[in-house]
Amino acid sequence: MQDPTPVKKAPPKLRTQIVQLAKGLAFVESNLFARIFRLDEQISRMRAFLTRNDIERQQKRDAQQIIDDVADDEPGMGGMTK
Image (tube, rainbow, N blue to C red):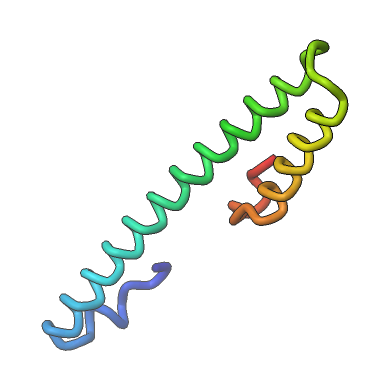
């Protein structure tokens, strides 16, 4: 929130509800970012695995397709992923 003035002017009960909602949103956002970072780590590990020479070509293609599918569906963080 850039300007808390409207919240400060709100009735106490509404102000309390707004603060509780903001805390809940911050918690959800924090969990989402943690999941995104874990997903990015798993994708990086999969990409590293695919650089091995002892994996058959078809298996590499299948794994790459999984990576592409997940990366396309990933909830981005404002261009910070990938």
